[in-house]
Length: 225
Image (cartoon, helix red, strand yellow):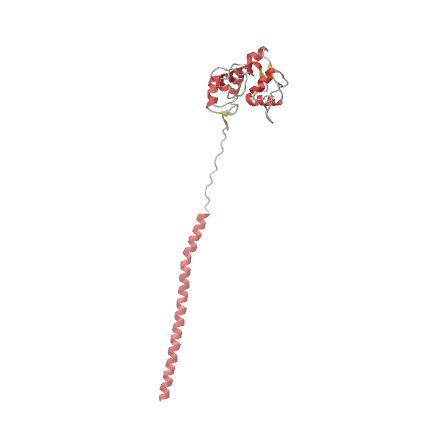
């Protein structure tokens, strides 16, 4: 009888162990699907947000292309004043010449300048003389043939005076590379004259006018050339 009772207790103990193990693994089994499902559910909104962000990022923003202006570009005025420039000095010059005062040095301004003064550009020394009506026209002297025209190939004292006005130095005072006033109208003299006046030649009368204007502006009345 005692053996039977002991055997029965042993069977009950085994059953309890089996039931406990089954309950443990059963709970583990039940909990695992729920955790996996919860993980999937929490990831879905993240994927949707990422997709929305990608769609937002792929939206093409309109590209604004700056329109190119077809207006003519003019060079700011600087001496010598010449065609293609614009500014207040040119406007004042136009008013003196009696042409349209739009401040743009165009063909009309250039034609009036040449007609009245025989030049196509205006240097810094010529500008105030024109505005003050001190610069005289050279066309009459050229037309009558009474004025000698200095040009490439000319020689003499007048050419020397021209070269001095253009900034050439005497041979004894000239440094290496400086232009020398030798009284011969060559390529260097022509280039310097063109740069300063816009002309390749000049009358003696016009040269005298330039020199007189220069003396008056500097107060160097006793200077000789």
